[in-house]
Image (tube, rainbow, N blue to C red):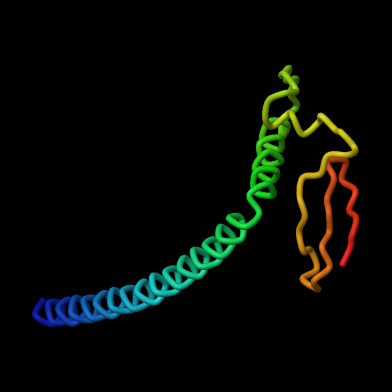
Length: 125
């Protein structure tokens, strides 16, 4: 009986060490994962900040992309939607060939591209 108690005590001590080691490993791993998640989050916020600053320069593009996103959401499932085409985002379907949405340096080469509502892209230096 004394021998059994000794084995039980040794087993309990070994189990406590294993559990303590596992908890310490868990804390190290979780801390590393939190640091990595923070790095990824910060990088994402930096990129978003850059994109928003570019949208400040091209507000018409931002509005156009917001409307496209709204259309995507509206039509992502089979749906029948009846809306007045004078209002966003359905107004994107009102195509007038001569009306442009703006200009943008698409290829960063200095040549400016004009994008019409019909989707045509024309370029000039």
